[in-house]
Amino acid sequence: MVENAIAIRCNHVTKSFGEGNAKVTALRGIDMEVKQGELYMLVGPSGCGKTTLISIIAGILDQDDGDCLLFGENIKSLRAEQRIDFRAKNIGFVFQAFNLLPSLTLAENVAVPLIINGMALKSATEKASEILTTVGLGDRVNSLPSQLSGGQQQRVAIARALVHDPKVIVCDEPTSALDHQTGLKVLELMRNVALTSGRTLIVVTHDNRIYSFADRIAQMDDGRITKVVNSWRDLDEETEEKAVKEAHI
Image (cartoon, rainbow, N blue to C red; front, top):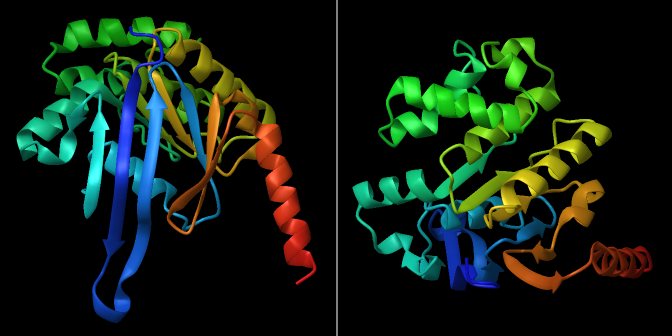
């Protein structure tokens, strides 16, 4: 790993949905750089464009204008099958709703990305069991998701995101369904396990209780990044000042 290498670079990325009077502009010229080995948070009000931005970064959506590069690769320029292959090998996802398959065991759920990448079922479940042990669920590999707590299910989702050794892990509200203490434990686990091997972690969140885990925080509003800070304290100060001003309007 090259120290401080740029993992993700967005240059003037724009995105709109709909046409005419129904047109909604989600992103209004995003410029962003995320370093390799960094935990980068996107925060801001609902509807400000956070999920749209990570969907473009992950190659799920195409931007209207601008470039978004992952390790120098412009995903938008790839053919459909190349994009699917690039995403399967390089990107891991942690979803808000866990998205575990209820009829599969934990090991089978975690093995899914490996099977998609062509690994045999036996080898895939063996590797899945190893990563489940890493996240503290080695004794539950044959359990079903319904037999776990919310925090344990989120650990399974993290294991699934890590199992194929992706370079980038994208998390959409990973603690929204968890209580405070469980949410802190999950973020600590993600930081310790995901970042120790130089992966890049992007977290979209409304949960200010987990801001302190970030290396940098980008505040978004109305489709723009308005500020990037190195400390959650700086972000909190700005938020408080804005609230005071609005209270006196």
